[in-house]
Amino acid sequence: MTGFVSFVGSGPGDPELLTVKAVNRLKTAQAVLFDDLSSGPILDYAGPEADLVGVGKRAGRPSPKQDHVSKLLVEYAQSGANVVRLKSGDSGLFGRLEEELVALRQAGIPYEIIPGVPSAIAAAAAVGIPLTRRLTARRVQFVTGHDVTGKLPTDLNMAALADPEATTVVFMGKRTFPPLVKALHANGLPLSTPAIMAEAVSTPEQSVVRSTIGGLADQLADAIGGFPALILYGPLAEFGDD
Image (cartoon, rainbow, N blue to C red; front, side, top):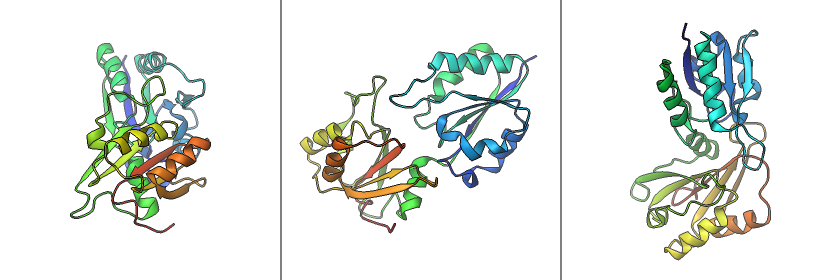
């Protein structure tokens, strides 16, 4: 007997931002494998008999290996369970989704993908700005701030990331933002380019810092902080009220 896996995007953390379909899948799941950022009140929607298994990865902390997470998914589904794989934001954005899909396909297990509110969209909404802007920001680009070693990726397209007419969103980039800014500046992006760092978006711990890429790089060189964050820079970040 084979079960079924629902990859559910939980959004940025506020349970009110879950989709109706996400809530329905949580209520009927026999097992929920959740990331750290998908825990807390979001798990209140799970049924009382569901197995709740934390499989989240956080930089600098002990975390389960990806092959272990994929193995758990397969084993639960092979037992006949309806499984929810709960990922923060949207599971298709820097969520290690592909590795888990490959494991399910190889095991012949059916699945679905339920979109969630991307954290980048939630961050822009939280600070009251659009991600696009007529005439001056016709392009939005998302980039990860670190590779598998935790360092700034060496193969980033710096010319694209230094485009002053694009809105750039950096995921998981607090530790590597200072060297990223150094590379951006070397590719022509002014240090005065507006920037926003949004931490713990949509949760009670949310905080927003408005600065420039140069100022934010200086701040992060001295102190990182423990909350997950997104960094936005470009022609949009000068908008908005706290």
